[in-house]
Length: 285
Image (tube, rainbow, N blue to C red; front, side, top):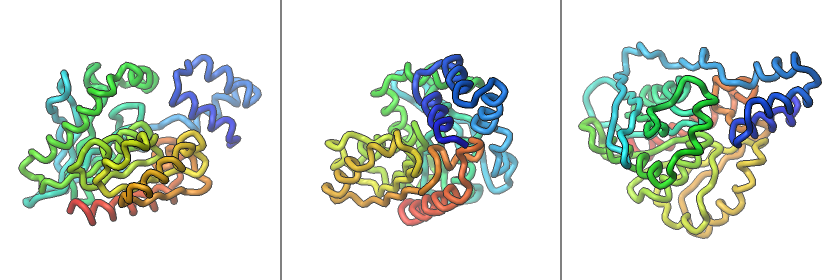
């Protein structure tokens, strides 16, 4: 697919661009309304493919939970292994589409690997993630950044308070959640590991605060997010932070999202996920 089309879709999903404006520009790029709809059909998320770990998996316990937030009650989806013992915990942070079936499946994948996984809903202050993804996208601009950060820090505290927890915590986030992962690494001195997929970078001045082992996954074709890599990596090196940074050549932003159509890349996703679980096994097991 023409990179200009993919870049336009990226702009639509990350900036305040109306559906009407997006479609008008897409028609101009593709040459016709029919071709625009064909292009859109292979770019838009399809949640029919979201369940790679069954909701009926006999090895897992799944719960809809709530915990105290900053001036709100936070909702979340929790997945954990059955059986006795203490487990490391992982906060799974969604993209700018909210807590959707794909992110819930990611939580189940984490639990299947032997960890407690909590996927908070950042839109809880507004009643939770709506079914319409366009409606969800528009709600993110209304989030109070300071309160939102506290809500995710509280998620770490909630996990550590559970009787099944071994007290060790990590986080993994994608896109919007990738930036939140970086911010948690900056703001939680007790976080053991943080894995950011194609996420915006924190301020360089805050990098020395990072105590967690850091893993950063970037898509080679993701010019928008990748523009922040040089300053971030320079700050990480200057502060002697324990980090790994991987750039997957020839793949697009959101390459891990197997419900994301054309941008999904199975090989890169498998490699990045294997590296992610390896880090969790080393740090929070």
